[in-house]
Amino acid sequence: MNLVFLGPPGAGKGTMATRVAEHFTIPHISTGDIFRANIKGQTELGKKVKAILDAGDLVPDELTIELVRDRLTRKDAARGFILDGFPRTIPQADALAEFAAVDRALNFVLPDEEVIKRLSGRRVHPGSGRTYHVLFNPPESEGKDDLTGEDLVIRPDDQEDAIRNRLQVYKQQTEPLIAYYDDRSLLVDIDSAPAPDAVFRQVLKVLS
Ligand code: AP5
Image 1: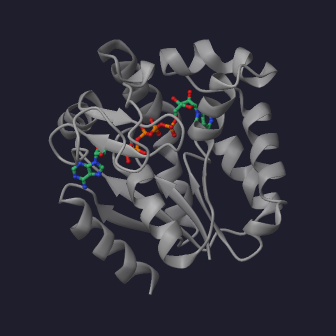
Image 2 (image 1 turned 90 degrees about the vertical axis):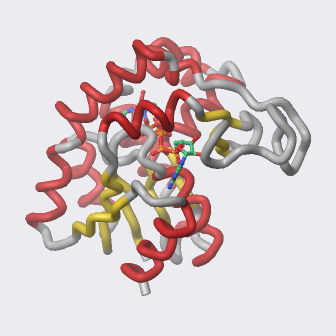
Image 3 (image 1 turned 60 degrees about the vertical axis):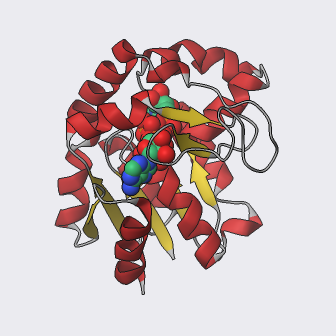
């Protein structure tokens, strides 16, 4: 099962991808997580993309496409995968079509005002990418990861200016992918406004 998760920043793509990956035992491949891991590890790639991510702009297509093309050659992706945050532009979608088939594109739909609420309350465990929300999905102990007890952080791109820019970039460059996958009869809308368990039920219904 080869899946693409689309939707505005903060729509819950990562939250659902984690659950779906576990349910179907397929890898959750988040380009955002890969870039953040490189920034944390201070790799050459990380140094190149840090300012871009902090501002909420997009990493150049060529770099991102090569990263995903390479990741999909790994053994664990042979039975299927979830691409979370890729493709994000039409050239990325065209490139993906050349090296992998997409079975479904799930479009997580959430209004802008909910996006802002979700991103401003998000807390992340940098080691694993596990995501919490101060109100909607709080950790058991405030500010600490449930599994490791380590500190949770606020992503630099969850500051107000960067959130506004990410929404604008999404509308200009990523939203056209909704029509792209709809034209190919691969698109399914998921209402992302309900609580996570209800969103997950919708996703399982679509995929079963
Ligand atoms: P990326 O990490 O992909 O960020 P994003 O698309 O902006 O998505 P988010 O991770 O912000 O949100 P999400 O939809 O996963 O929501 P989440 O589940 O966390 O990309 C970051 C950056 O990397 C980009 O800006 C760009 O610079 C670069 N990049 C990445 N891919 C690229 C590409 N292909 N090309 C070029 N550049 C690229 O949920 C959000 C919050 O809501 C959490 O707090 C969560 O707990 C809560 N929540 C989730 N679901 C629910 C629910 N149902 N009810 C209530 N709360 C919920």
